[in-house]
Length: 116
Image 1 (cartoon, one colour):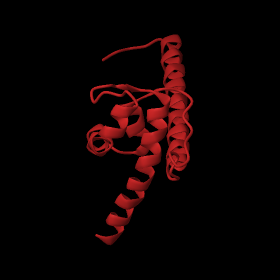
Image 2: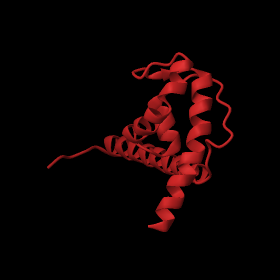
Image 3: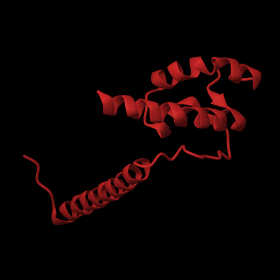
């Protein structure tokens, strides 16, 4: 059994309270993020910086592998932009092209889910 002095107990209690407030703040942030992602945030997106493929997948709410399967269809256009298959960081024009293309495919996927 561990015995604590009053000072140690108050210190632990204050650390616990701080951790609890951080968790509550994170919950608030996550709830706000879920509310924002309920709308298609990629529709009409005008990226202002290069992005990683993983960031795009997270933004669309799909896995990196799922994004890769969609990007296979867009390879010829991406090659014309100078983007290789193995590139992890995509230039701004490629990101805007991918987002515009996947907007249509995302709607098609949602329609297929509704039919099933």
